[in-house]
Length: 304
Length: 259
Image 1 (cartoon, chains in turn yellow, orange):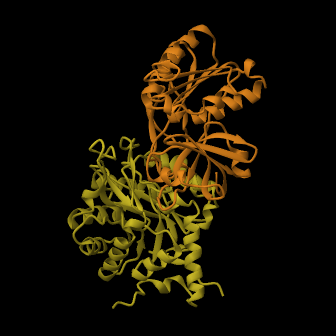
Image 2 (cartoon, chains in turn cyan, purple):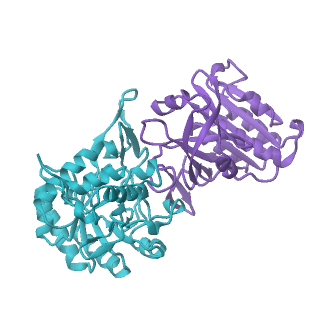
Image 3 (cartoon, chains in turn purple, blue):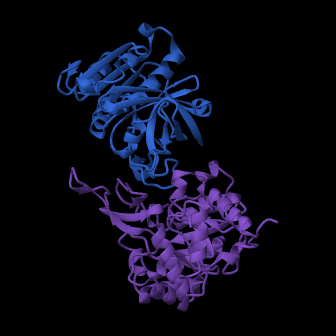
């Protein structure tokens, strides 16, 4: 018998536990040339802001051992252009659409939540953890007070469930996670990228035009597993685990650490079919281990 | 766009730090256009390396690359029979109009122009003397000169310059470019090379009222247009916008790109 791959996060059912991570998948058009997007559990779109943003200067990327740094700086067409030009296309596919948003103020998060939930996205992910912009990013996600105010505003103005994307660049992710849960967040996603830096020894200049950027890829996977586990110990709400997942086995590890669902990001750059291979890998693990449903894996780690 | 495993069929050292690899892929050969590129997985290095297509003959594609780091070092060590993991073909490619074409290459920017020259030449004639393509290739010094013979087989004239005067004409591509555009009517200038060269070429072409297509290089991650790391600033109708070098480029109209 085929294992049940469905997961339900805050009342929203996903056909399988694999979504794409924000910022690695655009609005789906490019990877949609490689496979049918309806194969995915969901698509979390490129981070949106109230107005269009050009982002940072280039170079915006630097390779690192088993990873990469990026400092795109939230380049996006703005929430209105997304609703007008991209959402209708995404809606043609039988998959969940999660809108990722970054505001410069608490009110901006609220306004975007109102527009996007009215436009018909399935969930909204609050980016309070972008390391690459001065406003509307990391500073909201690194203190319990500010993250709470953003979450409360979003919950008040959104009619769809709210996910908070957490930064690993904090002292205690459990404290932030609890503050989100206490403020009414429906789910958490983690981890965003880890702040990093590379320097060209020949020129003595940072490789990235932005000097610093966010580290992603297999290099951050163990950090992500640890933080998902710590967060699972701290809260009851669902967790979308991400950070360096490249294989089905990675995904199973993340689920065992306490995630209910996983997101695949950087791995798509290496292999466009990575999200589907991760999905198939999870299913194979369930079959081999005679587990009836993927939801049985959540938090199944047997601690020493 | 597709991901294909391809067998290396030839390897050649073109200069101390420049290698040519030919590999077989009927699928990629079918879709390849002059000016497009591929994303090659380079062993344990995470990101694919974007490398322009230098030539397509039958089912064989040839790439020519300079050794810049760990990724290209891995590629340079490939042997005949090894398998490459290739994503392609990527980007838009050159738009080759009717009429005389002038290709201008700088250093390791020259390879994609060979493909453009061949495409334009097969579209017109089979006799080099009456080819509608003329090439100007600039290099740092004599040991860096690559593909001179290959360009000579498809171009009516090939002008080579070196910065130090050890081969061809002393100086940059700008002087022969100025002379050629003053002497004859060209339908388009196609250029690929370092940014300062592209700026100079675009300036001369625009002054002579000739359209100039520039092929840009930028650090990439996905190579397909999803991640937005490889953008370049463009200006259209007074509006500044970012375009993706991997997807909207790598070839762009010089009047739009802010070089």
